[in-house]
Length: 518
Image (cartoon, rainbow, N blue to C red; front, side):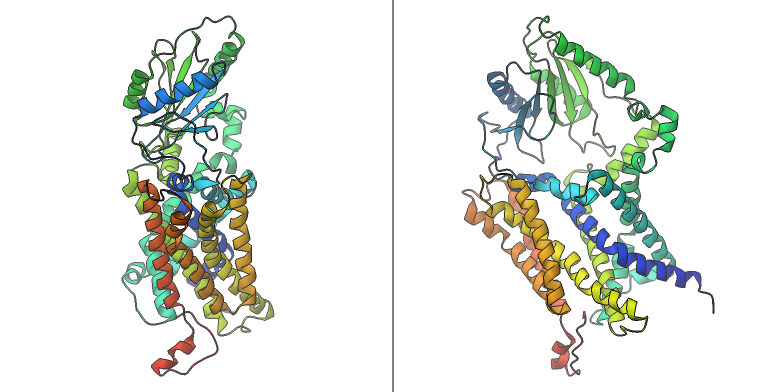
């Protein structure tokens, strides 16, 4: 037997790895693309939160007044401040620092009855866990990211004339046009693909490769990040503080305006405050920055003040070079820097990447549909299974995502565990799409599911108009629906390009029963 060349081996690896992991990668990329705007989706899914333009100092004072009135004896207060991406003001009492709590009107300080929702956080969590148990999901997604790197490297080897192919697009050539589009999209966003796959692995390197840290720091990962000393001291201080609450004298909390001004000067825009032992002489205020001030991911960074005098007690920790490198990698992946221009760039690159994966999956089956038995009965069975799975993964998942937005508007506002029901609607639509794809002819399933997804995208503003009193009072919600309209038009264009060969009979070509992507 004549040995295979390197290009032939890489082509086999690229093709089969692309099919097996392409379904997984499409789901990861599509939900990751949506997660770029997770805060904006949160705002759209909580339309009861008003869009008042209030300074953080004013909002913090409203929050303090509420907490003093309702949780005067609590050991800790937490305040989530309105930011550029999130207009809501939230408060909670106790050790909970983020999420949950009570939503307040930033202008009046009154409590708001906000609907429970899974929000944009669902797409973010799905992106790196696939809604599986966290550690299992991280391992599965990490394996997919590793395969993505293999696909990219094998694709570079296969396409020797990579830059020539970037400028090669032959329109109206059927399958050849889709292959050109697949190649051009792959080359266009190749740096993005390499960066996003590699940094995705770096984020969870302690889970994937814990041996070195465990050996050097005896398994103490807090010490590996330089937080062992501070963390232990702070924990001891907090424990001591709670134990000495009876003995510590009462004291008035310092004015938050200078605290916020100094924290903003050092950290940039502030996302929230945590106040330990409020109303006592040993009060401490911790200020946290908004994620996105710099390329380095600032998650976990904070600045501590004396709660009575306002004096700075602790500046942000200076990271070690290795830690700083890992945080820069994570910041590149999370797109928390560069403001909205960078966020839109990631969103467009994510859409192009999803399209590249989708065209690769479709081309695999279209190419083999013409010779189903050429590679044996098992391969023929696999190709038949791949057809409906392709429809369910690409069109069905798109339909499920927009269906979740509709569920947010249509489910009763006072429904118990409403966020969980939104997620159930998402998975129910996705499961139904697979059943539909199995029962219908392949091309009909593509057109029907993409058509329904387009209709739901185009009609999304109607859902807000019918269910809300002031549907477009907040500009961010309006922008999200305009983006949905654009996506709907893109889906309509895709449907027009997906038609059976029989429709070409009008052009004089013989009609075939065999459906084909054209």
